[in-house]
Image (cartoon, rainbow, N blue to C red; front, top):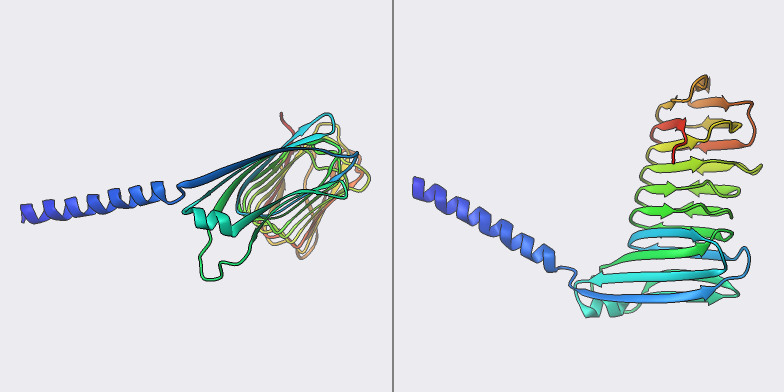
Length: 253
């Protein structure tokens, strides 16, 4: 009995070690792209169809830098997955495309690191991984992504829709266009700066809405609707058709 137990234990360990070895070598092929682009004022930056993480740093000046790391199980998979990177009428486009190779399962993981001028208008769509964006002053359009989203600033008249994962936004100021969050599934965390005057309107929401700010609470205005006034009120944060909790708290660096 004792020998049998030892043999079973050894077999399990062998399977675990074998699986670990396979996991460690699954994405053994790698390449890297480094480019820089001069962007006109308020240029648009479009990033889409990326399987992996996206980190966007905001800088002064007019030069955008792009660093992209790709990993895959084989060189053939990297060759099948094409990186599209370039400028179109002054705007910067970054996306992936899988062309041909219909009979091959293509799995390429990306790590995208961008530095962009703070005045750009940014569109991010179809990112399957964490998304971190610095203090963009232009418009943000963030949709159809899966993974947690962290924004250091709400942007100008921004729309964040159809994403899954926790969305965290630091709001030091809010322009008259306000902020729209619609059709997202996952928690929404809004960190509001002191002395900021905004209104929060929540409609068709599935989940609780709460505030950690002093003298601010959500009032129920309908079956699935809530509202809250921060300070004396002002530009509106509209949260519509989302599922998950909503939390309003104090902004911290």
